[in-house]
Amino acid sequence: MGGSGSKSKSYWPFSGSGGIDEQAKEGNDQPLARPRSFRSATPFVFTRRSSLYYDEDGDLAHEFYEETVVTKNGRRKAKLKRIHKNLIPQGTIKLDHPSIHVDFPVVLCEG
Image (tube, rainbow, N blue to C red; front, side, top):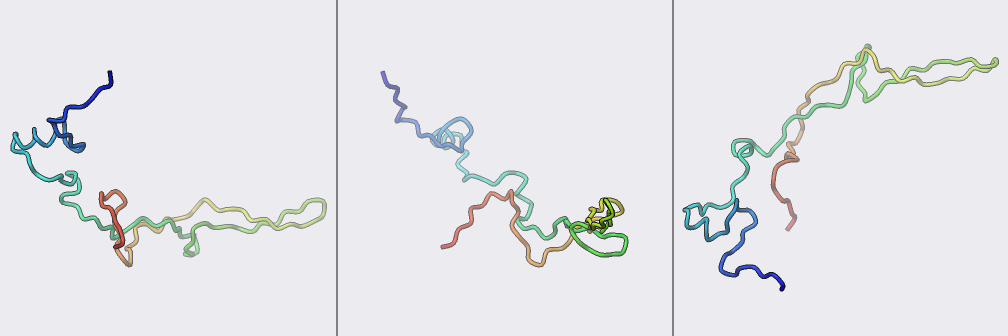
């Protein structure tokens, strides 16, 4: 009752529909190729978008705060208020050392 697979036909998981034998008959015995989008592209990344912002004074930081003084019941208390307006993103920056793109289909190992 148990099902058994056919031993006459090889199964190759990366092929379209048939096994290796069918591909050899069709003349399509090329090794696996990279996806079309990676054929002309480089695996390296040379720039990235910065997460830093410039404020009105020209200072550069991830986030900016303004100190405000709140008076309750005669007591003064200082609070920090985050600034969201009038911030200019730094934009694209060049990396010191290129890195490998996260979607590049390569396995890295140390040997």
